[in-house]
Length: 144
Image (tube, rainbow, N blue to C red; front, top):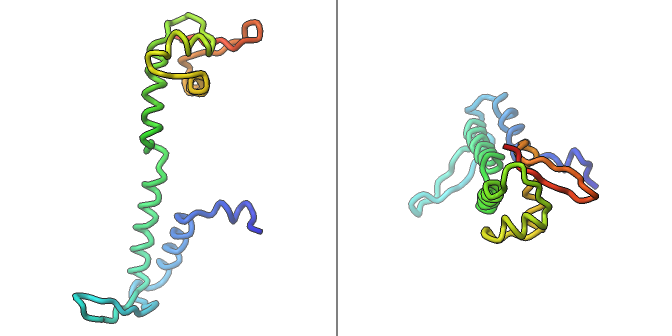
């Protein structure tokens, strides 16, 4: 069974370690020979450490770009717009329960309770909405 550390090792970590290891060798060191077809003709090509390091570094770059936290998926982009629309439709200083938000603010944007509640969390984290408990009910208020 794999340990937690072994499970956390990603492709980019492994490829990065491979690049570091390959860079300790001369870039002209031949590590293998492959037969490839070029224009219908078979040719032998020497694979060097420099070639491998370059290809692995490119893969690390692609993985880093793909897994960038700044890049949002289309669904995340849509959710972000809906959160902003929900926030814009709230009145400053007016307390709302999630049910109130669903009935009064979100019908125009088609939200239900299961969507509204989690979307309030980023607004609270940004300090734009505050949450209070009033008589055992969670109440959310837009802050200026």
